[in-house]
View (cartoon, rainbow, N blue to C red):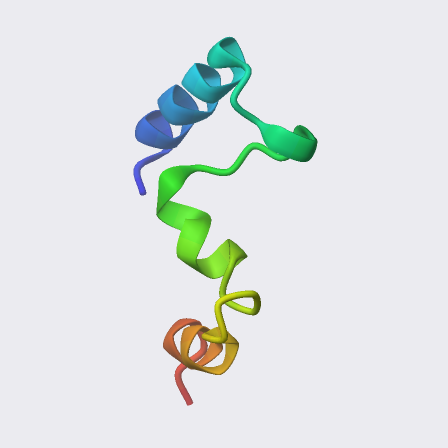
Length: 51
């Protein structure tokens, strides 16, 4: 994710006050953030950390 795109999304979330539990979570990172809850931790971890 290009830095400028990341910064723009974070700033938009902060301006809109869309950060439940004081966690600013960009859209691109939602799958990783909720992998354990959704039962996809192992698959997600393997995708991020290829052997």
